[in-house]
Structures are given as C-alpha cells and as structure tokens.
Picture 1 (tube, rainbow, N blue to C red):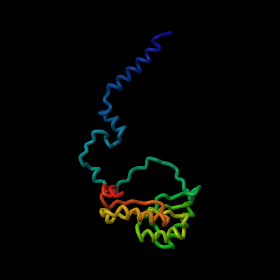
Picture 2 (cartoon, helix red, strand yellow):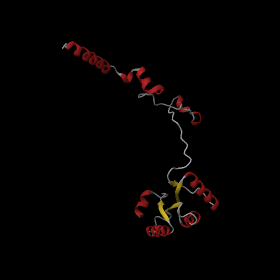
Picture 3 (tube, rainbow, N blue to C red):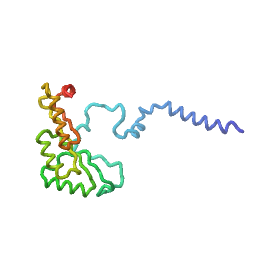
Amino acid sequence: MDVRKIWVPVLAIAGALALVAAKNWATDPEWVKTRYGNWGGPGVDPRPGAMDAVALKDYAPKVSLMVSETQVAKAKYPAIDVHSHINAKTPEEVRQWVKTMDEVGIKTSVILSGATGEEFDKLVELYLKPYPDRFQLFCGLDTRDIDKPDYPERAVAELVRWRGRLCCGCKITLVQPRSRLSKCL
C-alpha cells in the first residue's frame, strides 16, 4: 500500500483547514455581506441612521416564504374558542354569534369578560340562559376598596356567588399594585 495515496489528501485537507482557521472571517467584508446581507452584522454602528427614519407605513419587506394557503371553512372536529371577549351586546347579536359558531365548527366559546357584580349578572342572562352549552363565562374580581380589612371576605363571597351563576373561571385585571392584591388573597 502506497502511504502517499493516503497522506497527500489528508495533508491537503489539513492545510486547507489551517488556512480557513487562520483567516479572520468576522472582518472579511465579503463573508459579512454573505452572512448578514446589507445589515452589516456585528459591529454595526448603533447610532441613529437612515433606517431610523423609515415609517411603518413605508416598510414593505420582501416575502421570503412561499407556501400554499389552505382555506378551511369548518373545523373537522368540534372546536373550543378559549379566548373570546364580549363581542355581542344584544340577544340578536348573540344569536348571530351562535350561527357563526355553527358555520365554522365551534362548539363552545369561552368569554373572558372580567365583569363583576350586576354587569356579570347581565352577561349570564344574555349568554348562558339562552345558550348554556355554547358559552362559558369568566368573571372578574372587583379590586375596589382592596385595602379595607373586609376585602378578602367580600371577594370570596362574590366568587362563590358567581360560581352559583355558572361562572367557570375568573379573569383578574390588576388595577392596584400587585403586591397589595397578593396580601389580600
């Protein structure tokens, strides 16, 4: 076996690797342009420049991803819309919402209302009484007078009342400092 047939290609590859390793690719302008495009890559001057004046209305990037689009008119299996808001305010609007749910295959919509007190009671009458199997309502948590000593008892009493009104969860929107609410709950 001729040793040169094995070692000549090995040495050639080692030499090429040494040249590659010796080159400072991070400063090679051709490599930087190939890798980063016109952006410039690491070391770009962070001071304001011409691109800082491009308004969003003028920004029109080229689409780089081309994929086919599939229109699905109705879900194959009954779906649950787990994040809805109060999109209907009258019985007729709720009927239209249910009709749309039927057309697209949504079995249930979960409405994250954040409503409290009488406002929540009105939503129960509007959504849950006529369509108990089509909607689930999340109530809110009233954070008024959170600093009063009786707040924890009032909050728990209201949550218990809402549970009796078919509420399935509670959406908490903090209007007081977070640490104060944590102390009460």
